[in-house]
Image: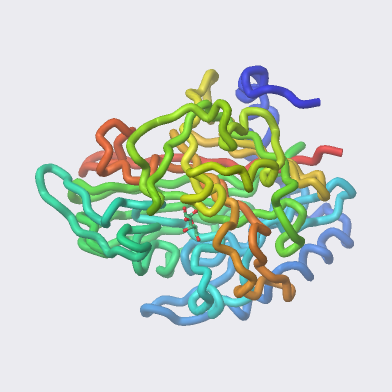
Length: 395
Ligand code: GLA
């Protein structure tokens, strides 16, 4: 049955308590041996993630919950390398695109797979902004604009990793004053926790503090295919986004500053709709993005706790993903720039539109749009946001 977001919102708070709301994740020890073996064979070899870079050692860290769901995270860019959750027949399915070695993350053309993106996720127009009367100039790495933190964003640095327990990994990174042009030393921390009860949740907590006024917008750039990474188009996945409005862009994908209604446009995902159903509509915004590559303005949260921002159903696997967050926006990117040139784990290919991203965030170019929610962080303030990707199955 298809439910609207209005009725959905009423159950979110209750769901948060019932699903992935407690910290008792148990261990994977009691899982059947065949599940454990299937997971082990799907994970990349940890040896291929040990490298030395910028004076630090990279590694691969495995998180598990009581259901046997498994995440592999590398300290290179604090990236999600693999995310295995059960499909409708119980088979463990790797829903996150990734490479099988740290070298590929460093050298392949696609540099955002699974990455933590910062200091500012998404675009800043012309790579410039003013803060407290001073103009800052950032690297321009996307036409005339600054994208995803610049030439060497947070996804291209080695983070310090600390495994807290079977299901929790803490990663920290100190971004120096003037790195990529940003003011202030930014101490950042990302905590991944793989929770499990009747559902499986990957919780990502982002924290940061600064010693000078700066701008911050941290997100995760996992490319998902809910039928399994490298298993073909995502255009038949059903997407629902809890947004009456979105931020239209110019031809360089910088928001115009207007906030417009999705009603009557291909951006209306208020009911579950196949991602590709309207992809070829004659729509200027789709032309600018060469498909979906837009920020949705999330409807305000009606309950307490995290807001249910979006849901996606894998048409073949039955895997149902819910995205919960306390961020005001979400970038929906439909894999428009994918072109098969990046070798994925298990010999799979990253063909055009075979993955999507749902990047929870503040709106793009906020430092230049005073009417958008502020992304400023001042000394003494604490940046803290949470996003949960929750997985279950619809038969
Ligand atoms: C984001 C951007 C896209 C693209 C992808 C990575 O989603 O909005 O334009 O840069 O990252 O390729």
